[in-house]
Picture 1 (cartoon, helix red, strand yellow):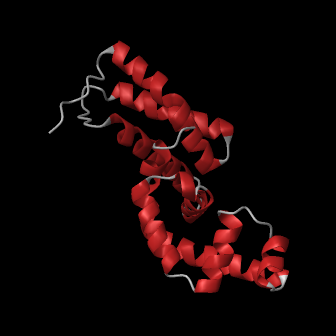
Picture 2 (picture 1 turned 120 degrees about the vertical axis):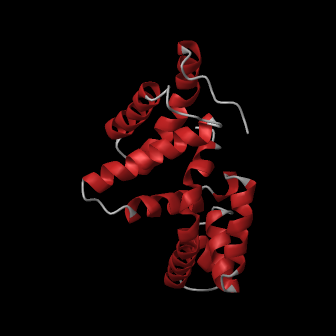
Picture 3 (picture 1 turned 90 degrees about the horizontal axis):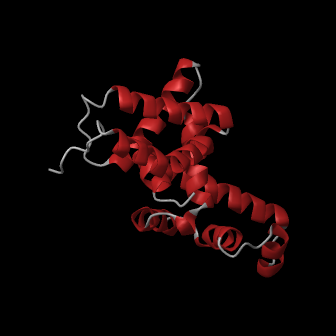
Length: 180
């Protein structure tokens, strides 16, 4: 077992704050799309960390902080009678939109989901997301209508989102490994 992090030390706490504030704020903003709410949530997490420093036994600060922010966001929306599936959808959208920059372990899981797509659907999605081709370019390249391209992209994203439902617990891991 790793040693307990000495959050009681004000210098270590301040360094932790300095090291993680920006990443946590970016993560919180990505999930909430509200600048003030994002900052308030991160601030609440650090206040709680300081107030509970005598009781906490944190072995790895980074995952702890991201999990705490995610939980605060869910708590905020739950208290405001907001459906947390919107947050889950934002996470799934983030994963899909940032596929090439995420953690290799998550990438492996996504590749397995991509392999389950029908061949034509997968081809259209890869052209759209990874080759940055427009809908018009894909339609011309494959000799299909623009509407077919749109339908294939929509269906592929829907299928990936369904597969990603089981990965929502990875949100903090994915986000904290990003370089905001």
